[in-house]
Length: 129
Image (cartoon, rainbow, N blue to C red; front, side, top):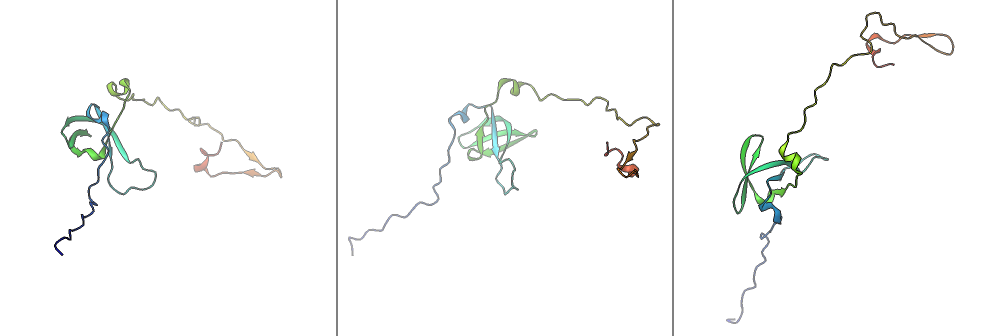
């Protein structure tokens, strides 16, 4: 009985995660969303600017707030130089002119093959033409 030794236990909770080598030098990251989401939703948000790094965490700027996240939730974001430096362009809508703005607009009369006139409701006249 004294020669019996216990069997080593299995290590089920020693999960290791992959850390990308360029994560140490990247200026922006993608942050994984750790919650159940509906289908066709993006699993990562970002790119977010990296403010500070430690061995296990990264401090990022998310919507103007400093947030500390774990390294297992991030991916490096490889951005083109012009996308990092310039914000997206703002497109201003020009004056939209409707085709039917005149007061004397007479909608076209539709006649069926049998000679009857078709009268559409006035609220639907913008959709039919």
